[in-house]
Image 1 (tube, rainbow, N blue to C red):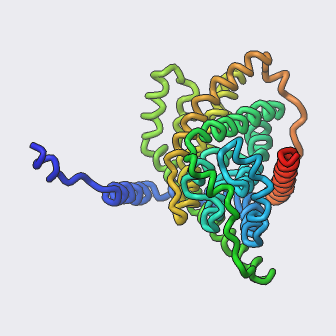
Image 2: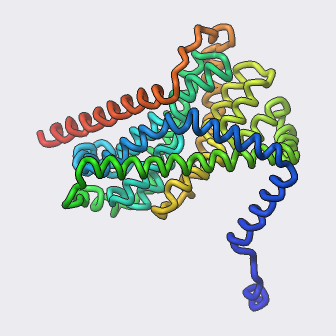
Image 3: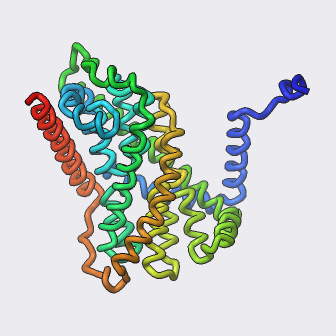
Length: 381
């Protein structure tokens, strides 16, 4: 009996991927107009929004690592990062950039830290689990103001989204290997020769643009995939399953949000539901991020061989805790559409918004360094 089981040949991941790709190509052939429109929409989203918003963060993070700034500042931030998250001080760069930017900046920065031996792969697996967030600008301007048309709701969504990720980071500290403390407190490996400024800028710009282009490829791919899935009626099947759980009106939005975050939230904006139902659902979609974002995160850390299992588990936990947290807070605050309707925020272009968030993230990073130095001095006393 055991011999028969051992002789069974189960399909490997490559065979499964090949079948899925074949189905994807067949879908594009069957619905060419749908695929073309979705690809053009995804490319427009990348060119007009994602590229100007993410590129400054990617370039700045590459320069901070390449110039040894994070290697030197890591010692100062060690007293803060290790007690809280059981991570080296240099990991603060991913925390600052990931929390102030959008997906998948935290993963891109973490990959750079791993490649420069500032964090280990197990530490990186925990780091990406709580540093890949929706950007503050996206939540405030796109979700709260543009889609839900309730700008003041941004405060609640921001609080639950970021505090939830911080809580996950604090819980993951218990999964750290005690032996990590020796590597975390050891002096970081620093290159003996630093390239000239011109070469540093060229390398940083090249790596950053390559990463942003990779993100663009995934956006276009999953935009087409989401459109084909919707065209074939598979989303309708998921929606029926969700409707059986009592989520009739929001079922289609949740089914779309499973694949792509923005599409799901936009669909949710058109649902005729009270705000105290919409906000928890929007928070859950933001916490999940969508398969598209998760694929982007996996792509950013693929060359660094960092496992994404912890990241996926963290997304599930964050999704589960976000809904009841926002629902309870909304009820406690007696939130209604009328009380939330205020003057919309001024329109901020993606490039200006990205530069603004970059400045905020650098200030956040500087504050972490300052707190670490203060803790060091208190310990010395």
